[in-house]
Amino acid sequence: MNSLGFNKDPSSTTVVVAMSGGVDSSVTAGLLKKEGYNVIGITLQLYTSNNSAKKGSCCSGLDIYDARRVAQKLDIPHYVFNYEKTFKSDVIDYFINAYENGETPIPCVKCNETVKFRDLMNFAKKLEADCMATGHYIRRKGKTKDAHMYRAEDKSKDQSYFLFATTQDQLDYLRFPLGEISKAETRKIAEDLGLIVYDKKDSQDICFIPDGDYKKFIKSNKKKGEILDLSGNVLSFHDGIQNFTVGQRRGLGIANEDPLYVVDIIKDKNQIIVGDKKDLLGKSLLLGDLNFIMPEYDLSKKIVEIPCSAKIRSLSEPKKGKLIKQSTSYSFEFDEPAEAITKGQACVLYDNDRVLGGGIIKQKLN
Image (tube, rainbow, N blue to C red; front, side):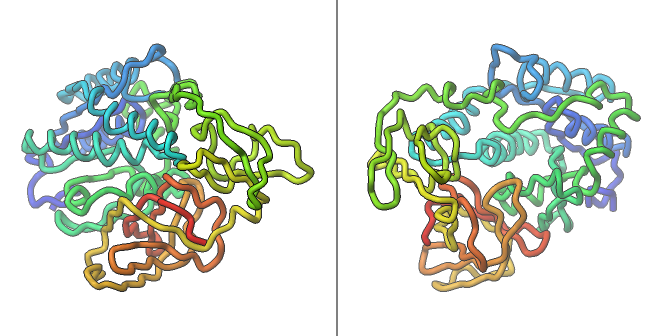
């Protein structure tokens, strides 16, 4: 059995590598090529940037050029496909609509769920590739069927939070060669392989907004509304709910003896609710857009409780609690209160380091 779990020689195993032009995907292709696999590199052009050479972007301009040069260095076939239309409808429009609805979206989750893992994977299968590999920092354990997903060995680079929507069928087809190594090791491998991207900076979270100004990018019609405290007192006014997120402290325009934070966004009333830091705490949340990678649990029952941990933001550590199913509704209840439960963010479930799936936060319950 080869390192990718197939009972044949690497030379007889075809792997499609999603190449973004960054160091991670380049090293993924390089390692597999070095092992003797039949590697095909594919890069998706996802958007057109007016400053395509800007550091911190990805999947556009200079990055496509970098991916092509890496493929040439590795002597592997490389193809570029324009997915701008799909990316706009599935990722950019979702991003804008979420902010307009008072949510704080995660475009990387939606990009992985749709363009990268759905569309690119379908294309890989059309090429009759045995599997598809990416440069994500995540560990996959198991054979070709019923694989499990685990947090990366390098917790500072772990990307499991952004991959909770990966289905079981997708996970069975995917491979993540970098899950067991650190970012420093990845860069060293790239340098040893002579890849030009060995010292290239990591891309930023919102790749299609190079200057980071999402408020300007959204360009929504500004609809003025009220900023209220938890007692219903009007403290000030705002120019649009898309300019705020739960936990925000700066930019409220309110003079107060103690710091105030956004604790809720009421889309239907176009209101921003503010309170003290303690008002950000919550013990439970309602989940939607669910995906589970835990076939050992019977979720067909009307009432299910699964002790596990959850992350509600990418840079936090998982907090213990339990997933609760009641009829067709799912919620998560923390053992200890969590701060800034935010609509639109992901709630990713873990059993120690194993990823069980998760969903999108629809609202804080209490």
